[in-house]
Image (cartoon, rainbow, N blue to C red):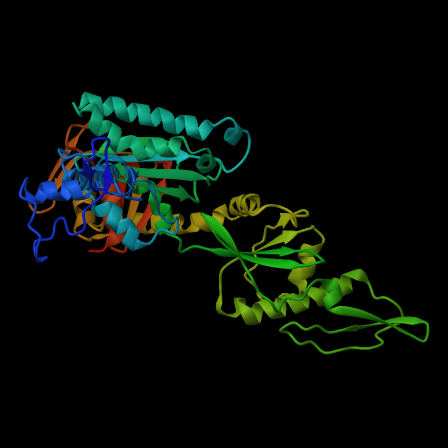
Length: 486
């Protein structure tokens, strides 16, 4: 303690030892104020002359001691609210992305599209381009944009509100703005739009025409050619350096990798230096095995003989690897003088009379397939020809009909064996399968379906065959006709 000028003693500043203790003998508790106030006072103590205690906060006696907890709760609530808002935005506002379907159309995928029914089902078919000036000038992109604008107008006429239209078409507009998507097209594009779903297929075949159909189900007839791939042929591309074998159909072509094939003439015909003479021997590592012949003649044999030996090895290898179980056409492609040489040694006889001539070694797959398909048109037309002959032979019986009112119900009831459809034709109306009630309209009315499309779908799903023909080849001049099973 110290004295002031008047001689009075004053205690040192600071927290008195045991000032808040009530269990110390001889000391009385502080009698003024509540226990909480004592805590406030205790928080203000110093440790020396006017020196505050280190790392201690000084609280005001009126401070709300629960404020920190309130702030924590408020922050937590804000975070939860934000999380809820972000979750809501993602699930309820952001549109779903368009889904790509495989161009290798199978019955399961086709059946799923065929079974879909909805208030709004939009089908778009475009002829697209894989390369060329059309890609650079955004021709396909522009056509797709025009169709989206037409859809918008049609849906507005049906009194669909703007927000619903915007949500329905949002994934399609995302495709429209995707430059890379339009630079990776094939021969055609199909897009199917409905509530909550947008699907598209890059088609390996070009649709006969661009089409937009808004209905209560999808329009699927242009997909049918991908479902009927029974007709195929082989393409053998010949050169002295290598050969390539392809399996091809109307709608695509794929190379078959056969490792045993010889790598050019030099892989079969070898030359040796002996006694200053060039002798040759034959033989290869190919599947044919071939015998070795040394010293045949003097010097180098005729080039055509070398090529014939080489092609004989190629034919032997292809026969063992692929062709021994086949009886479909083999189309040859190569420089003109090579074609008769291969034919002279080939044991596989169904070789197509016409060939693709010229150096095709560096021709891209798409162009090569287009040339092959043009040569093979009579082969693919044969299936349609046989079906038409069957129709003609049975035209006087009840097993054929070119009357839509007969053909359409028959397709639904699994009676149709061969269905003939005019390319690009539509018949609008409704068919009640349960009550066998058919209604046909001259133009599309609300609630109508494309009855030709439905007949096509039913025929395919019921293992029948569909033939799309020009108008001048249709039986009876009708838009639809059929050969019945019974």
